[in-house]
Image 1: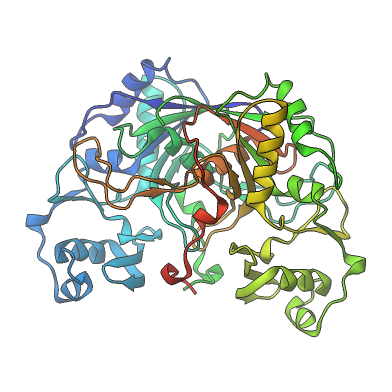
Image 2: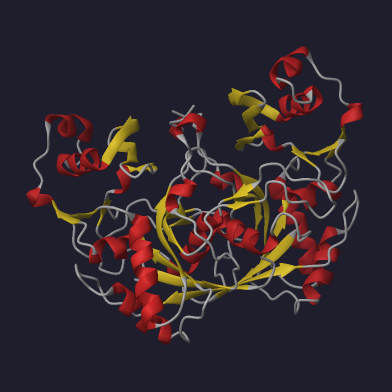
Length: 246
Length: 246
């Protein structure tokens, strides 16, 4: 892990619709940046993946429950309804802010339910049903068209005691998600105890630095990592029995 | 923020001692990697900064209190004593694991008190007294010797609901820590509401990917960002009144 890294934005990807061949669009975008190389890690924003997978909801189709109305606190109760449908458990609620555990096990604001930027104020975008499967499908498609890359499906999450969001890995394919240094010796020969580095989250954050929020850049390549492996987004979830904050 | 980034490890920095001119050593290391360029962001591991600032404690000099003994649960009570001295408040304790708020306001494991890798099993390294001041001093020194760079003093923190650590920014000088997109329009012309991106933490995480834990690489350059500004590590702290998890 000690070489130099490049983080390369993938530009010119059009507004996405359900059924679009995102893998092919990413290969096309990568070719404008010199093409994928084996060992590259492709980071794709969750919203891009969700759109091609049809995880878009029109508020007009949502009937809010009584519970959604009571949680909405002046916000749109239809949005709260979708949050409740996506959530396995509400972790904290300070209306209209809701921190929830999604059905996948992610703890995040609004159970990952987000306003669509490009689809207009009356639509919501939900997280992919299975982000690891989404990442694996993209990896397979890109391997077929171009090169063997690792894939991360990323999203912006807040943190309990720090301001601002950082991008993290929801879905992972073809790379290590957690680098476990347990038992490796450090540079002075002392054993490192249980050092686990969430490299997939750090890669997602690095990619965010070139993706921005306002620029319509839904993907980036991180080049120079040596992290080929069989990690998954689930590797990054804190097991409930070790959770000190619920 | 849409160009390409490079993340460049700074190698060959010797084991550090109190009083070492870390800025000069970093400039020397950077020259082996082509030198600093204006606008570079230098990320330096907290442990390197703490060592030159003399924030190293020898366990033989520590007298544990009764409270430290009761929290130690079989671990070394002198280490718990130092954690208690560094902490403003204990947030969670599952002996011997302690999550504490440091006197700076960081919520992290062991109040940032860490075993020293290179100084041997009987020493602890504490966080810098004022990481923003540490970053500013390094920035000034490097500006004098080489170029105007941003500086981040980084450390590895765990997260409440995700496994593994990611590196975050404790001290910041010369760059924006939180990128506030509140009110900026997204690519489709809709307003983004209160999107705050913790870019300094994402930069620290990107640098960690080339620094590793075992390789004796305490610093890296992140090149290609356009984030010159007046941010600080304090910008990244969740205000107590917005904290939902204590």
